[in-house]
Image (tube, rainbow, N blue to C red; front, side, top):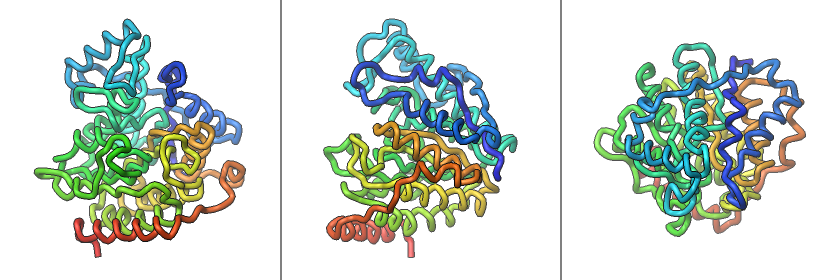
Length: 351
């Protein structure tokens, strides 16, 4: 068993958009319930996040934008972006505590209190320096990584959300200390429209952004093929001091917003490999956040199974949360993914 912290505050549940908006905090609540029912918190510590200051938040967000969110939070009216992220009363505080959870995770790993830390309330990878985007107000991922760099030299971010993590990519695009990897569904009419294989970083960070744009219908077999052919060798080559996993649940085969076809078994294979890499390369240092996921029950199962794997819990308690089988891609998708992988190998010098 590995010493694992589960970052949690009941105020996380306040970050839930009203009406028929797809982002609901039911996912996080169900995850905690699944863990509680299986006795996980006898082995995993629940740690309350320490609220960060606005000054710390301004490391990655402009002060003008922070003030804008505070004003919208007071009235609860209007939008924080072009349409995906509506304001509601208290959205500033609800966003801040979730960002604080990821910062707390970084502190716990940085001071060696824990091997692994999980913040299912984090993963807001679309938020940019001066704007909200894609249900994300403040970018906890970019902030957490910037703070981690103060103690740890090199960080590998592996983002397996079904959408490209555009905000995090561009906030860290020229950072030479961060390997940024994203596997996501891609076509130009699919949100956010970024994340092609040609986006590889700039300046001192050139070559350290690796996008794996997958076609709709990519299932377990070809997702794992792309992951093992591209991600694993590049992470091993980079030798990070910390691995940061953004575990969005919306690559699941029954997610209503994304057309990737991962089962819980596919997710678990990815998480097992990342967990193993953390012990091989990073002295066990691993942080997992949540992310997207709009089939709430499936996302909660994915996160619960991932936490059981990371913490080294008795898996017999969690087997009933697994899907029965792996899912196979069509021949058309297989051919397309193989072409993408070969192109990426050439771009990034993978043999």
